Figure 1 (cartoon, rainbow, N blue to C red):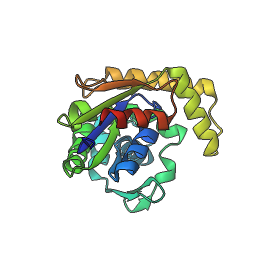
Figure 2 (cartoon, rainbow, N blue to C red):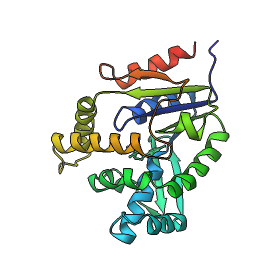
Figure 3 (cartoon, helix red, strand yellow):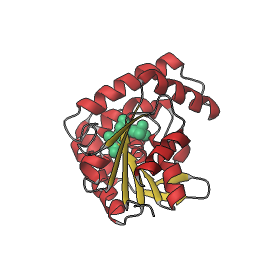
Length: 224
Ligand code: DC
């Protein structure tokens, strides 16, 4: 009989495999899959649409506070649809333009406070796999299982490049993606509030040489 945790936190760097692995784990357990990065992407996209620039922290905070964000979990297709002020913007959230500005917006403390509050509420419902950067450290510090995924910047850039191609996004070269990943890692690790780092009690898994299914398998083995 497996000891199945009620809350599973999966953190890690950009393109470390969190989303793919998290979805596999959630599907197997029939848990809610919740990608918190999506919320930061909505905040960045929405602020950029309104302000055409996200460098003014106070203005961004104001816009984010007014946003009406709704998430619809489409478990059948394994996607979370995102509505911003009633408009489905799901397919806009992984555009290179959003990749470039999201870590700036995610570093604003007021934005983090607003989004963390919503994430905690979802976490408290239990039977959840939540993925992000600060889930094990800040959002769900009491989660029974904490995983931290790591991979080299080169492996992650290659994964993101191939993922983009399969989504018909061809505007970014491998080198551009690698540069963006290195910059985002730095922003995410060095920000003052809730920086990216493994929780003290997280299990760290290096995913360079493993497929998403193999990583998910390792996570299931930890539940034995
Ligand atoms: O996982 P992702 O690439 O979709 O995340 C987008 C950005 O949001 C990334 O720069 C880090 C930030 N983020 C965060 O700061 N905290 C989270 N819990 C999730 C994402």
